[in-house]
Length: 260
Image (cartoon, rainbow, N blue to C red):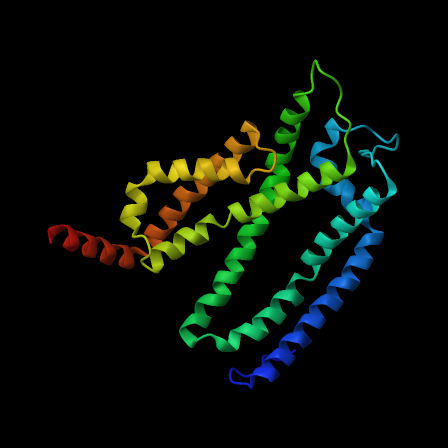
């Protein structure tokens, strides 16, 4: 799967794009079929953090309820699709890189791969954090809201869809350090302004957490907000160390503008 040349006729570019898309779809289709067979195991893994709030099947497994056969099929397909995307992500990403990388300038290429690697690592850290720290208290709070009113019937589509949305939301939320880093390195917002505007940033993060959290519960929102604050402060601390020269230059430029 070689990387194509940067300069090609338009129809050759379209042909290469079609070829790479076909490879992606073919690999993803095979992965989805394979993972569809293993959906019960993967489903139990997803439900593990909230198993204490779910009925037991009698065999030590968490149990969900589907209202019709199509719901059970759609949930299994959703799980297998996301598992397939994760499993084939190296192929998908390589095909996309191989198509777009030739169009980038040499100075842009040197930032592209490290940025991509950092983005993937941060996304994975976010999903692991959500799975290990967030899901249990979030579902406990949601389940407790039924006390004195009735019992919660754990519907298959609702629970699986909510868990996947949680994972995606926290995965993208953990991209914040990368955003902060590039705001500083490309002089979009100088470090001094980011550091001095922390109150405004905290309010923006609070609003963002309220919008992004799938269940909109105060427990989940506050947990995500706490994680975002740690990421924000850690990003500024890391930027101050790694980009010390650039920050010094930015401070000098800001001081010159204030003098004028």
